[in-house]
Image (tube, rainbow, N blue to C red):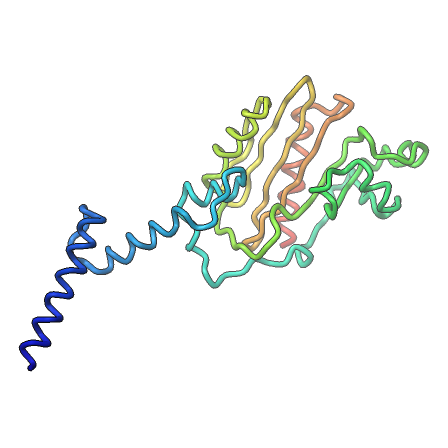
Length: 230
């Protein structure tokens, strides 16, 4: 009886190994390698979205399962210091004024405007075409991001396809900044990784009076403020 059981076990293991080699010919009979190969296959198809930049980044870098059990800091818990020459728009205007010219995707973002433009903005009671900074949670949900590395090229390619001229000005584990130009207008964004959470700062030079260097300076200094505060 023992011999029969042993024969059944041996034949079962042989069938499993043969199937694994058929699916993964480069593997040996190492069961850890077989398990990893199965996880790799799952990773390829697990909730990747073609037009989601972070999803493409995770697919390219294989990080879908790298942070199981970790949770990012809540966006509301992030300390948000303000760069000296800006003020928070909602401290001076009703939210209907603040949100009037914001795309639906930006509703809930924190908007900052130039301090020296405050009185003029009050007179027109509109943020239209102002040099304003938008700070928002890049993506909702509880996904923990260990690094921003690898996101630059997918993002640049995505914006180039939309007709922008794009260059990065910082590319680190916790910072990714790009400057964009289209139809004579300049804008910039910088993504900041804070305790697993990605926040994004965006600036648009509507009046064409700030320039690329000023956009990069404001974004870089504000990003450093966020990092130091948190």
